Image (cartoon, rainbow, N blue to C red; front, side, top):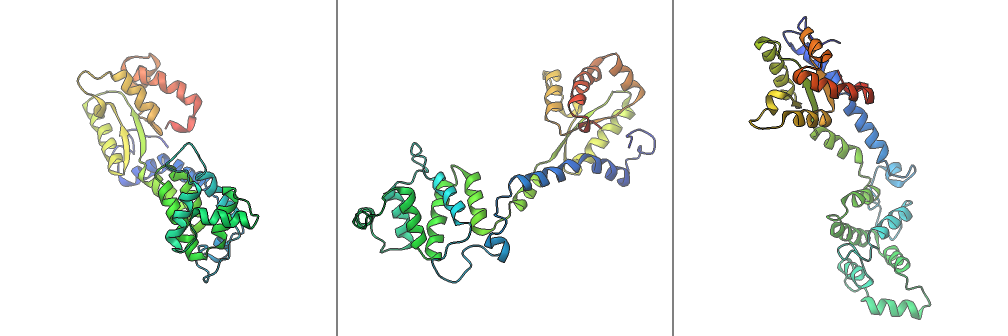
Length: 279
């Protein structure tokens, strides 16, 4: 597919759709890769089997099949002793439990009772026992409160735990993130004449109207700005580089003349790194 002043000259919607179709495919790949990378639901979890979250069962103390993974992730999250914001000591953990179950023993009462029964007072073991003994609604309150406290400090891992708890698909979040991230396109062209410059600027504006972020010298030019640095930066940031190839562009590129020559020198090295990036 060639972008030139032949059939493409009028920039009608059909031709624009063809161009945008070439520019955008990587976003579908990014989505698929992101979903695959972040797929953390167990293959045979009750979430997938019943399409429900783990708290949707009748009131009981039953633990979900993926409970060990949920708990291990949770404890790892709240066991960083040098981080007072996320670390849950015994008293702090039990204070949260008491918000779900008002008459639960306080810390020293609970520890004394475990010692009397010959049970371990290791935090990881007794936190697990406490959560196991709560009914589903109480356990939900405790987990939600802990995760809400920790979320501002480690949102990624909290999201992973929530996806296990509630069956939240990360695919929707990734789709939203990709949709919000605009495709960045750098346009490289030569200043052949005013008609050509207007044509290129018109193309840039049409791409911008289609929610594509366009990097082009006419937009980057500011009095006193180092244009060579801005060119390098724009090319580096771009997802795609669109070359408007004309005889004059080729002449300047071959002779490394002017802005085109400088851009082409950069693009030539980048082309070997990623040939799919340049159109």
